Length: 201
Image (cartoon, rainbow, N blue to C red; front, side, top):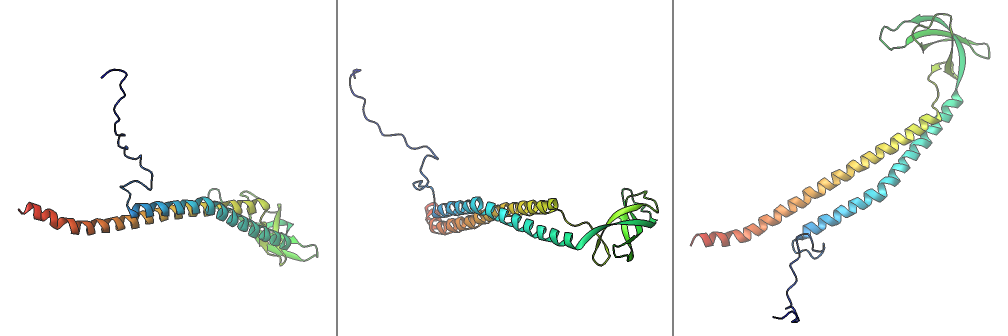
């Protein structure tokens, strides 16, 4: 054969494993295609639904916390109180509990119990928060607390959504595996007698 002769046509090489299009792969079973579609659906729900739900829950928690903050701010106010007695806390890093006395703007005198820093002496004046009934209460929620609550709830929603996605993926894989095992058992029930007959000759 001379150099000018045309090369004989040859068959194209067989495709390598993994080169088949997803829908044309002869090794893909119906259960494989069903699992692939379910996984795509779950991923779509995760990508689209999770950000919206996390943002929505975070904003709802922020709005609720802001309403609580406004209500507490309207119902509570600060007064200057004088320590009348102190009960020391022996726990390291703890706070002492003190009896305090203060006088409202109306002239009514009140007494109550409030936490104070360790080492605070009797007769010291401190600022405390009280409600309209003259009870010592905690400081009202702040805007920073409301933002922290919103971020925390949004983050927890994102974590819960991701965990739910992983659980759904695992459940899908488990269900598909059971389907495959059932198909293999059914096919083996058809093939096993033929193989047994060949070896019994």
